[in-house]
Amino acid sequence: MTAPRSLWRHRGFRQLWVAETASHVGTQVVGVALPVVAVAVLGASPLEMGVLTALETAAFLLIALPAGAWVDRWRRQRVLVRADVVRALALLTIPVAYLLDALTLGQLFVVAAVVGTATVFFDVAYQSYLPSLVDRSQLTDGNGKLEISRAVAQVAGPGLAGVLLRVVAAPLLIVVTAVGYLLSAAAVGRIHHGDVVPARSSRRRLRVEVREGLAFVVGHPLLRRIVACTGTGNLFGAITGTLLAIYVLRTLGLSESTLGLVLSAGAAGGLLGAGTAAPFARWVGDGRTIPLSAVAFGLAASLTPLASLAEGTVRLALLVGGSIAGSWAVVVYNVVQVSFRQRLCPPGLLGRMNASVRFLVFGTMPVGGLLGGVLGTAVGVVPALWVAVAGQLLAALPVLLSPLAGMRDLPDEWDAGPVQESSAASPGSPPA
Image 1 (tube, rainbow, N blue to C red):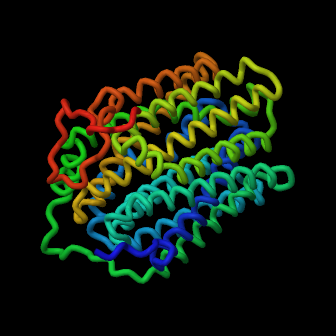
Image 2 (tube, rainbow, N blue to C red; image 1 turned 30 degrees about the horizontal axis):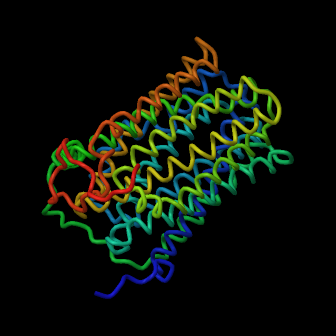
């Protein structure tokens, strides 16, 4: 058999890669700028930050399931382009309102909800589009390259934001994000690839198609455990995300540019993870990579609240070290489990499968955001961060206490059969 050509020679994949890079750079910049706007410009409280975080992700809980069914009915390329344009236009209202001295927290809340809704459609369509662009055997390589794109953006975005915050008001930095989304839309629009849409006659009631996607995810014991791990981790990770800007800027008394530096340095771990995910999985085994990386993320999360017990250089080292290790673990985990899901799922079910996973794993984030705001107000920021650490360590249990911990290889398709709970490691597997 002829080996698949390099993905760098695949025009459609290159355009998708360019689009993802542009989109992620903008997203990372706004990921620094928006909390700074809320905290430093509008004086948001921990509870208000919790509401903002919840609104950013509430759409995954509210509309992800029907969105998956709709994406399976529509041309996914068009969904990607339109979602990018909607996000760009919504974000551009923030610098306009700021220049008119009319910016309010209420507007931030509305923009967060609109951008979050468009992101649901973008994410579901994006993960469903890649398997139609590349060969099945190239999915892990493709996801790894796209994670490199994400990681490069994570390195460049927060660092760029940290530098620009010294000379540019945070609301104006959001223009960078809007431009990134528009560049992403332009790149995706240039992909010349036939996107097959099922005939209208084959459609059934929306609730029937939604139920099929959910049944696929919860019906496989490995997917079920991965979703439980990811959803629980995101629940408690959202607590940290909600409080991080307040923790760094107010509790630790660090500058806005230092926050950007910490995030940018931590994103280097994501770049390392994207580059090492495939060889690490080959060495340890795909199955065992998932629980190992889940445990590593929980341990790395503990370094963030530990920084409150240190001073000076040690404090900064703990923040940076936790971000690097945590980002590495998350990217390795995502590359392996997303590639596994894409290989396992029939093409006609990809949108609904990805939407069901998004609903189950991202639907916990608005709850975590609100919980972070409540805990930060009730018990203080640092104790709330320790609660988040404990939850992220517990999140690893569904995959740690599962067949995944003893498996080297993962099944390639549903017909391989659900793995039994008694599955053992392959003979000759290297130690985990």
